[in-house]
Image 1: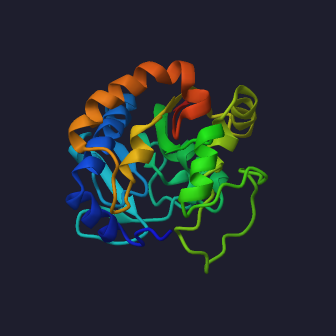
Image 2: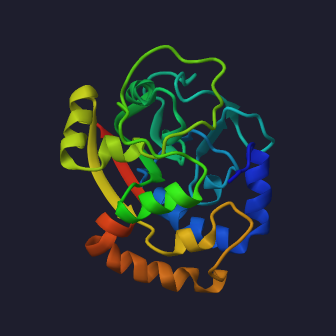
Length: 245
């Protein structure tokens, strides 16, 4: 299945699909609530929606658009040391060729006590089946998510592996491995979410099996069930990292 290929394409779909905006509204509210007060850098801002939910955001992407503030690559962030209180990435980590380079950059530009807030695909027994059958992005659980090496200049920025966030943060052992690799960052929270509404909404596809009017009530039900069923049914994972003082 194909997907939009430019932030402007995503924004067009966003503006024309109320159920998508209803689903993502809850996620943007979660992201904003997880940020500490201060200046926020959004990496991979795409359709530029975070600014509606969080103040003082510098939105960036690899593609220039009229609603973003800067063009940059997550592997090489053009900002000075300790210049941000938060870094937000929404559906970006699993697209990075070398995630370790981003976390090195995050360690550099965050102020002490600053946070990295990530909201990404999460791989569970149910979501793995769904992503494998109905989603164009691959799930490869056999890769080393922190492998280093040169960046491929010919690589498509939308190439991805939806397994990356789960491979990094999906259990305690993986989180400990991450903290050993990046001692300036600690994993302060991980949360499984999105059980039913997200797959039924169709995401950025043209179709939806759930009306926008039901999203909020169904999401409240999901949030109540997620602590019990998230390990098996969830489609998303939110991760909050904090820079040590």
